[in-house]
Image 1 (cartoon, helix red, strand yellow):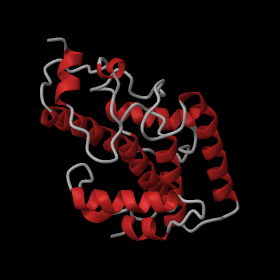
Image 2 (spheres, rainbow, N blue to C red; image 1 turned 90 degrees about the vertical axis):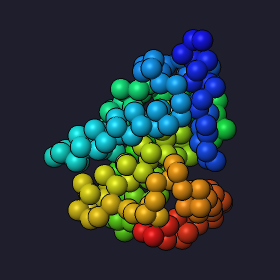
Image 3 (cartoon, rainbow, N blue to C red; image 1 turned 30 degrees about the vertical axis):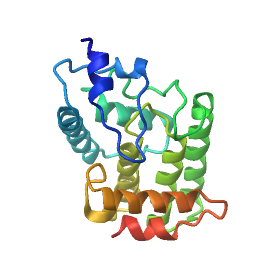
Image 4 (cartoon, helix red, strand yellow; image 1 turned 180 degrees about the vertical axis):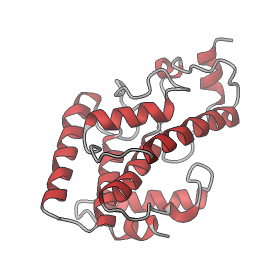
Length: 204
């Protein structure tokens, strides 16, 4: 059985996750992986390394596409060949692939303005950036984890405040907490951009 068939067979997608297509699944670098638990373990190990790297950053040059791609690569490059590269496939979440570059540039440009003109308090700034990044969904997978880490880095590097608690649970495994998180994101998706529930959740 080819590794891509193993991946397609064993990956279990929780609610709100982005399924990989056949070509993306062939990007798995660790050919010994045969179960979802093993995939979770190696991704978590890679993300831990990325967090250590990010924690040591002395600069605040975070609000740009180059850094976002670099962070995603740091988080997943030991596991996935396409880490740090924008997706080329349509997903159940996110914008069309051809819009990713433009929309991501626009988000970062707006965020620079938020900083310059002191538009939002720190928590709302980070929550809004997180939500917008999730909606764009630039990569084949790992967008939620990337977006949450970006929010925490914004809080730490720009505002020198504590990162979010994110419901004090691993969102990959706690279905109840994950549902609260998804409901909060969906409320923010609406036309009136209601962030009240998301702002409560991120500090719960």
